[in-house]
Length: 330
Image (cartoon, one colour):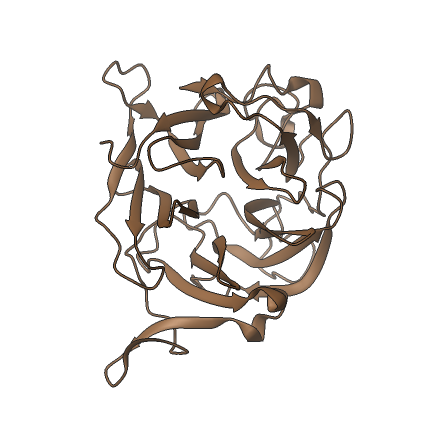
């Protein structure tokens, strides 16, 4: 295990933070997208210094086992908030008015040609156990992540909608999206959609994968969950010809992985990669973990997962950790 954030990222005003989803930029560098970020250590809600989200750091590290080093930040010397965020904690019931967007967090990114697309979640509330969202939308950047633009492509939360928390990967001209509800209590599971790469900003072009008694599984049917819930953060990647899905399983209290030969095929049983446990435990478990994002340079035998850890009682630590494992590891 290596600590990714903290003192190593403090020079950009990034000290207490989470998520850290990595994605390849057009020039080959790797962008890391972080959620609620503070220049102070830990997480202390609105009282933390320089609350921003999302923020983005870049890395050219090739020796992943030596740990991640960052070279620059979107925004210059201090990592900037790359997209609009209301930071309004009133949590009023009307989702279309002020006081409804507590924060904005990144979910996953994909690069197509010279443009990088970022899936973003508008969070209505952290206080509710269900963590209701307002909607999910796509943003894009054409300059290596320095400047981001919010697109009109938006998916509203119609009540525990399964299209709110995204992970996405390209293959054979399509972008494949696995998504779920944002909260970790909904048992609805994960659904699968696809869209031609050229139509990624057109919600009507997304095609769902579903089951029907007459046609069985096929594209174009209403979405049928492909894997059970509840589920937390997810990361879908195609590695050495194998589909790999890493995610936080709140029921197992672990970061797990599944694999599949086909994106629309059967998935393996979950393998526990990082097990949750109690603070101070000496049994190889990790307390209050979530996330589980795959570095794009990972291989099946050298899998690098980025996992968040937050002590919700004290606020500290609030950080991102790097774990090195392999897909058949337990």
